Image (cartoon, rainbow, N blue to C red; front, side, top):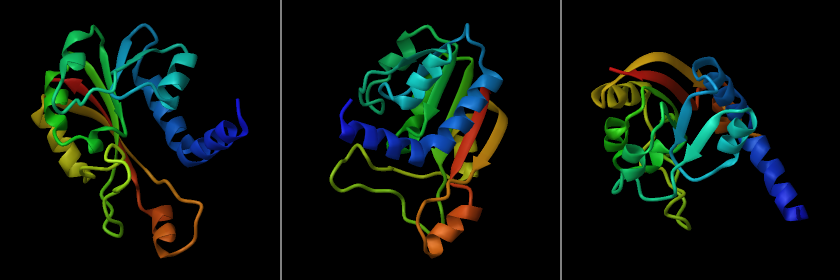
Length: 182
């Protein structure tokens, strides 16, 4: 592995490590290792970590899930996961509604009153179409046919200084939901 890859992995773990540990703990609490999981989005460090722990995780193939929900409809799996991906979609409702899973575990970034929705002008796939309030995400899931059985909010303090950085130490940034099919 090159020095650049090592540096990128280290930066990724520093930025996402705490959220990944909390997400893995949530999966361990609600999913058994004999259940098949479909994780929305391409293969990523979190899905690889879950596989290394013995979970049966398959990812979607990078298709535009707003337009094509075939991956969600065509796989045999019991658990649908969506970790930090639904905010990138214009229409997460169809994916959530069409899923054949019995259990859903997902995390989304929360809309923060002191920060604009994340947008990357250089990469249209690296943008948030929306960030949710807890009430909006709950309603989306309930309307798509899910019953929420567990909720958590997580802070994600940055390694920077400033007014917004201080607010991120006390304001939850991520919202995690576990839901069962109605």
